Image 1: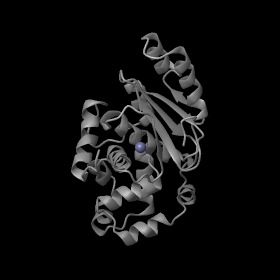
Image 2 (image 1 turned 30 degrees about the vertical axis):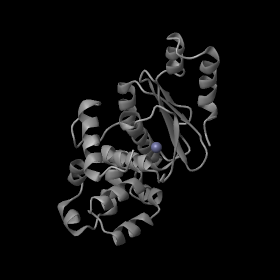
Image 3 (image 1 turned 180 degrees about the vertical axis):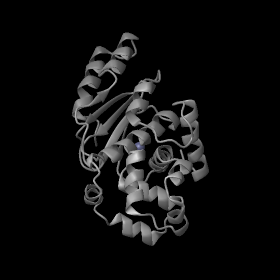
Amino acid sequence: MSRLNAATIERYAKDFRVNHIDTDLSSPINIKTILTKLGILTLFRPLSEGLCGLSMRSTVNDRFILVNSNNNIGRQHFTVAHELYHLYYGTTTVPHICRVGGKEPEEVNADSFASALLMPETGLIQQIPSDEYKSGKISMATLLKTERLFGVSHDALLIRLSKLHIINDTTYQQLKSVIISSEAAQYGYDTSLYRPGNDGLYIGTLGEMAKKEFDRGKISEGHYLEILNMLPNEKQEG
Ligand SMILES: [Zn+2]
């Protein structure tokens, strides 16, 4: 698939909210609740640096996501949203690995979708005081509050604000250079959003998807065992 324009991506994100997770177009979403609701088997495991996650969809539409628990929690939420794009709007059922800053058209599309899904424009603007919005000078207090509300990393929020032309390039660079966990601590916030976590967590039943396929006679016992072995060992990497 080719690179999609911004309007199409925004439409996908809205479609996903309305038709898949039954929510409005501006509220923050809870990633773990959504995964449970959608019945997507999701596993959080430490993976190599630079690797965000993996997703796959079976021929009968069972879905699976693997997330790198070494990344900060905000980044993990972004990875899940990125994989949701592949699972619901991608054209392939082949398992694939996603890395930070992937340049292929589908990777860029998935990143843009994740950004739009997690930080809907109207909901985001509602969080910014009007004087800050008008001047494009977003205060640290607003940034910290907004990152927590939408459950996103500092980088993800800044990229979204920049793409929506709420901040200019100079402000983007200034805000990007701060050590956000220190700022959060100074403001009295819990800093877990900016740190790794969720190691070993899984949502759904481990092996459920592979077992369903096996029960349907779609895959051999050998393949079933291979899938079960693959998940915790990230054998698909590379
Ligand atoms: Zn991807």
